[in-house]
Image (cartoon, rainbow, N blue to C red; front, side, top):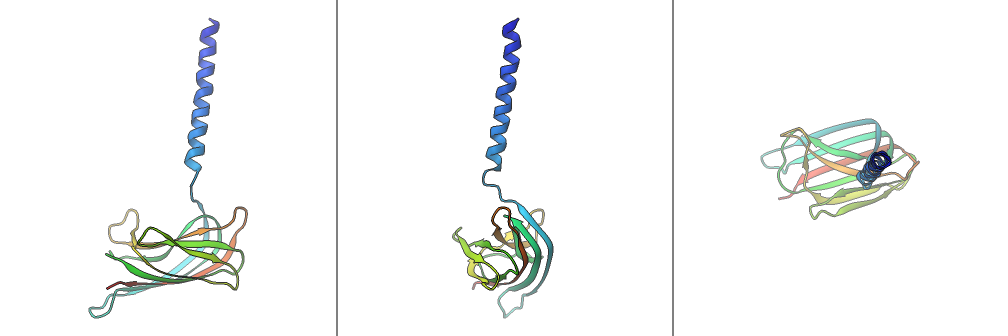
Length: 162
């Protein structure tokens, strides 16, 4: 009888360790954060003679953690490579920001008050999840743990590559 009582306790212990290990592994490498007070305005030109062009401006009151921010959003399906030019400023705090280029490389740097970040690279816009005809370009933001960035502003332009 002593053996039977010990076996469930040992199995329960092993199960708890397994669940804790899985939880720790699933959190490793996670990117999550908070964007509050987000506003964005975009306009696009798709003329017969002109290159496709999308321009967006936006702001975020507060950023913490490591969120993604869509600096370009359009209700059109875009195909091919586009030149992205974006400028990011912050009123308070410091953050790293980057986009992923066509070679799957991170392009970006650090932004702080009085020191804007300018990114110019070629990207592939991504489909907005759950949509068949909306595309976006995400900016990955990293704010040091326990800190926050205030008054983030951006201007972004996306131009089709010929």
